[in-house]
Image (cartoon, rainbow, N blue to C red; front, top):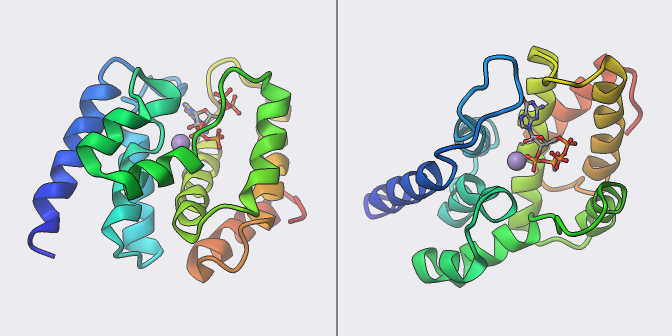
Length: 179
Ligand SMILES: Nc1nc2c(ncn2[C@@H]2O[C@H](COP(=O)(O)OP(=O)(O)O)[C@@H](OP(=O)(O)OP(=O)(O)O)[C@H]2O)c(=O)[nH]1
Ligand SMILES: [Mn+2]
């Protein structure tokens, strides 16, 4: 574990620099890096995950999708395994939004166990964030639709991590969303 700590800090620092100018969509415009750090923290603290590659991939999971970061760069910095997990959880932003959302539902089933863990924690963080406050420009209907879509993704991630899945199920129940 001791050798993993500097590596994790290196990873967090890399993501912080990449997301430097990005903000969340909440009214306070929270620094974006709060999200990937929170996703890794959910995995560790609530999911009991100790796999360093999964925790690193969680920290890096939105760098390619939302910044100028490339997979080649991640591979060179953090190795093939971490880069591959990030690749699995990265949406193709050239696709129209509807198709992108549909692809996530379809791809969820075929992801690696490591990628499934990151996906579960990403959804858990975002759904809690939606309960905390509505993003700028979002209606209550849009927030509810996000819950409905997320449930379709999470349904296909079942059998990955009991603790995280139970917490997600509870959030869906509170919104009367079937999973
Ligand atoms: N709930 C919430 N989400 C915010 C906020 N700020 C940024 N986001 C991000 O917005 C995405 C969800 O918004 P959408 O409109 O559905 O997706 P889009 O940005 O990709 O078009 C999530 O992306 P993602 O992490 O890549 O996950 P995913 O939803 O694509 O799986 C989430 O992290 C915020 O204040 N609250
Ligand atoms: Mn995310």
